[in-house]
Image (cartoon, rainbow, N blue to C red; front, side, top):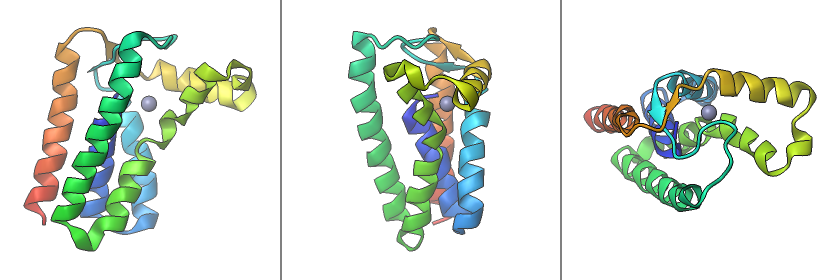
Length: 147
Ligand SMILES: [Zn+2]
């Protein structure tokens, strides 16, 4: 799943359960749940970056930061756990570094990479955008309603 829905799910966790000991594992766990929901991505396994990837990534990150900033504004007393949740919800995707540095893909890191790839339910069909929009909208609604 893209950065923005992961960020929003983590931000919602950080807003609803503002305790870092709870936010960190739940946000990381939310990552794998969302990856297993069908979702659109511009490049599928083995994730060779394309021109679209280099357009999508900055837009995705800018949108994620903007929306997390928005929900942090709605719940300023939970700002640190909102940002913590958003960050930790994306941490499992740091394995993408192995695409750029393939020699890292060995041992335990390769096992994690293989498992992370295996749970993906990616599609190049545009309906896979809808599932991500629903995650974003639901997260925004939950944080807005509990402010
Ligand atoms: Zn992932």
